[in-house]
Amino acid sequence: MSADLTQGKLLPAIWRYTLPIILTGLLQLLFNAADLVVVGQACGSISVAAVGATTAIINLLVNLFIGVSVGAGVTVAHAIGAGHDSDVRKTVHTSIPAALVSGAFLTVVGVICSRQFLAWMATPDDVIGLSAVYMRIYFCGTLPSMLYNFGAAILRAAGDTKGPLIYLSAAGVINVVLNLFFVIVLHMDVAGVALATILSQGVSAVLVLRALMRRTDACRLNLREIRFHRVQLMKIIRIGLPAGIQNSLFSISNVLIQSSVNSFSSVAMSGNAAAQNLEGFVYITMNSFHQTALNFTGQNYGSGKFDRMAKIERICLASVCLVGIGLGVLMVLFARPLLHIYLTDSEEAVGYGVTRLIYICLPYFLCGLMDVTTGLIRGMGSSVPPMLICVLGVCGLRILWIYTVFRMPQYHTLPGLYLSYTVSWLVTFLCELAVYHLLYARAKRSFHVKTEDVFL
Image (cartoon, rainbow, N blue to C red):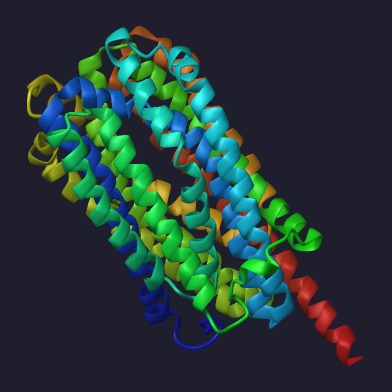
């Protein structure tokens, strides 16, 4: 049955809901980290750089459609909160073909264009060949990846955060075992890592679809009813497409930053890639509160409980700030031993990784505040404002920084480059917080007017 997020005490409910999402994300990152650890231990820092060089491009393409899955989750949450079971069923059966189309598109584009994308990023000659192999194989698995993301968004909107945790855990164990087999036994290098990833993604997709088919509520999936329902598809696109565009444009700035990192050396790329993977553990923990804010706000917005929404805002912002500061400090304190797990043949690369962790992990809580505020706005069904703010505040500021501040001799360093993150997070968070309160006040007034009209 769908969990009712509109009743009960909020603080314990929010943490009960968030903890499985955190564990899911951490497990996913652990299994992804296994990719870098295995190739780093078995193949060296060049292979680590090859995998790391693909991250920004993969995120640029994949995040567009993961954003659309956010639209599916919000649409389901609104319908559940309003008690409209028919709309829930139609959204579920629209989301699956949307996932299939998204995955097929990504596969075609990724396989055909991988090497050209890497060339545009000025990927070094000693890395680009391995990176292209990894990307082409990886994109062959984007169809099951999209099925998992859309299915997991539906389950979380219905209040089920434990299911995705279990399914990802099973797929992750398979990923690690296949990593070891393909890389160490078969000596497949980065190709083995990519192949293990897509096979494990297939497992997670099957498990999520199986869970949806076994549900007894309005979220139950019936394969014979799969089709596009125009009203639900339009709402998914209206909410999800701006979220996807925001995520992709966010990635564009990261592509430019990765290109700037590439301009230093392959050793700097290795250290940057390893540190970036470690940062992911902090980010995914904070981003879990984004998903919580989105779905709690979605259901309560659907039922018109605005006072409860105000409490959700305060709890989620305080929680993500506390978690972000604590994890950021711990990551910097243990930077060198953690980086040595990935990088065994280059102390210089470890030094580059430490630099990135100091300049990005310590103020990382600002990114968490920004993401939670984005979730609050999207939870109300408004996806264009956070997209526009992020385009200007994150993408715009970072691009401006790269072409102005970073070009100054005194700032043409990796620390000078990394400072662009802190500035963009802070400015974007403050702007989004102001917009959220404007939208909240307007929606609350509109709801009370409608309620009064009903009783007149």
